[in-house]
Image (tube, rainbow, N blue to C red; front, side, top):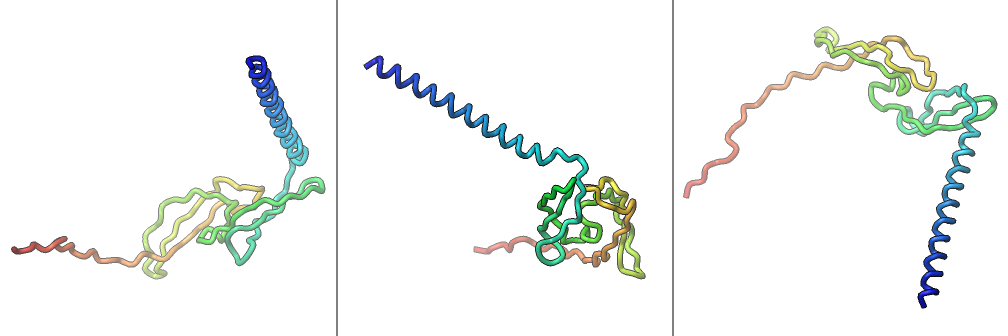
Length: 147
């Protein structure tokens, strides 16, 4: 009985070793396959094209030495849409409200251009001034109950 138990343990250990080795080989093969596709170092990427509408999730196509690949991307749906998600800017604080136009503005300087994007070195953005809201005087939270 002891001999059978020992043989079973040895077989289980051998099985575990072979399955872990097979898993390691599979990971190495995956890495080699993707490495072959990335041998190219001069990838050129196009703009992010939304799947529907003019903003939201989309696809960007890259080409290099006859190879093409598609990457998922997003086009912002807010005020950043005008210069895209590939141009990263550092903005100053908002200026004072211009009473004539009803807007306030700020400028940004280019911090980083992703995917070889062509970006403006500086941009100016504006937004409507927030309407002045009057603060209401807070009353008593609860009324006193009389017994």
